[in-house]
Length: 171
Image 1: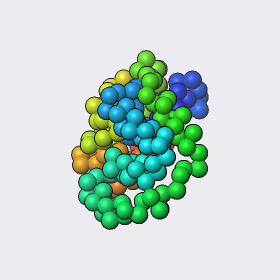
Image 2 (image 1 turned 90 degrees about the horizontal axis):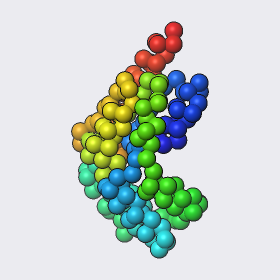
Image 3 (image 1 turned 30 degrees about the vertical axis):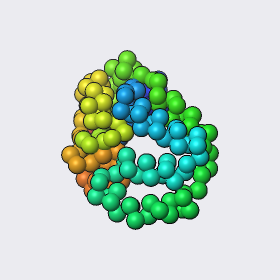
Image 4 (image 1 turned 45 degrees about the horizontal axis):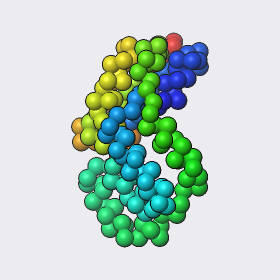
């Protein structure tokens, strides 16, 4: 998300279209609260807690309910990430950044797509981001959260239609 935004502005010759999926352009209290929770778990090396929190904040309640049976074994099944320092660095960067001024300079067709029930990046932040990019298309799916791209069967089709529209414009 933030890297794609930056490349679209700094190297528009490389970007003919942009899909911003379940992402943000600036820090906000809801996202910061989740990130702080995750950072605390990483600091304490609570990998099972980190994994469960990620599942709980990402997926729909119905999906989370299916994973509840696995929760007791997450400590055994959740080895530490390959590079916890990298994850910590990325999460800390998301706590204090703002690309709001940058978004007005995105000139390519852009699809902002996410879930209306996203607990990590609230829908209003995604809508705000779309509003700051001229001509962008906003698609927020009711009943889906941060895992919209993994759970929603309509997600892939929406992205495909956007890409097909881009290819038509190029011909």
